[in-house]
Image 1: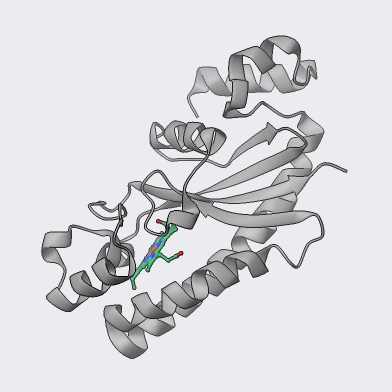
Image 2: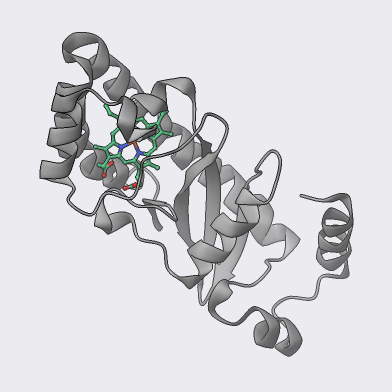
Length: 197
Ligand code: HEC
């Protein structure tokens, strides 16, 4: 977050004004800022849920890569990514977890207007930070997912993919948009939806 934006956010939080009419008009369906109390609660819950998903999915992905290489790891990922994402939301009542991206591989991970606005904001940051927004009665916690070296195996330049890897991707994801990334770019975000009490 740029220094000025951060200052304005702090000013906004300190002033305690929540979703006044002006911010509603300006933000539209792109999500609204939250109060400090809401942000604090969402940070704790969101971070726990995001960590749990990163550990479970990341662990399985690494194990699958080590065991069977990228082609079999893609099949494993296709089977387990959605169930593990759902399961990350089951441990805490009143939350649900999903993954969103501007360039989806799995069409289920398509962003809505608020997601797209947050992802675009993260992309503009040198080092993306957690974003928290209100959309209707739900607080959304967004944890950025940067591309690491290991991700390039399946999300990098398709020209470098072995033939078998390219074929299995086309077979499973005919509309795959999630290639062509470079290390350090934003791949997407984990979104934790938290119901307001
Ligand atoms: C073995 C191949 C493979 C590797 C390595 C890999 N992914 Fe993926 N990724 C997939 C597949 C397959 C999907 C689609 C299935 C799903 O997750 O729903 C996917 C989907 C995703 C999604 C969900 C959004 C979408 O496009 O559908 C995110 C976010 C993501 N990957 C991030 C990463 C990150 C970050 C890394 C590195 C830490 C990584 N991936 C490494 C294969 C891989």
